[in-house]
Length: 111
Length: 116
Image (cartoon, rainbow over all chains, first blue to last red):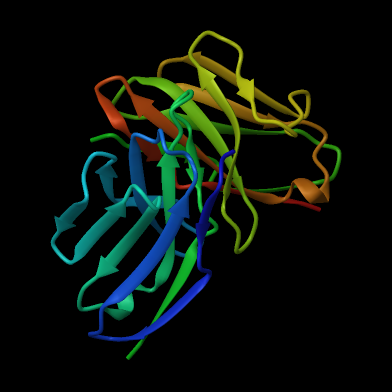
């Protein structure tokens, strides 16, 4: 079945690192994504990782993929108040290429 | 590049009326467009997938007669919410695949629908 799970809330202090976790079920997924959504806005693609990779780094963002455990994480280094938003992970379902989203993790960054 | 727009950005309508939402790919041709629905503080739920010139594929539990999707060209898809009711109030987001970029869906800014 199609299922992507995330923890709902994360609170960190400005300057700390944030780690948002995600688990998925479709082992044949080709790509896994992290999106950011600010209040009342659409989705902004932050980064993605191909399923044959273990890690991808892009400036302050590091994505780790454990394909055996079907676990994906997003680490944000030096978290800023502007990073406060909801973060969604998504897997690209092999059939039809549709995206299945997790519930979203609300990241709150306190000064 | 790869910009997707939606119109209107928000709409308020009376119960029983129909509302049309447009999704346009501004600088690329969209082979496939997707329509999502998002309730407050919840995830995006895929409603349907549409390919240009063919009928949309609806997800289980989504009423095709209630949510009419037309994908008339490679740059435009429309979602019409027919005979809207207050429970249809939601945030509707579209996305599009570009034939040149396989691994990314480009999302529109969303349309907030409120049915009174």
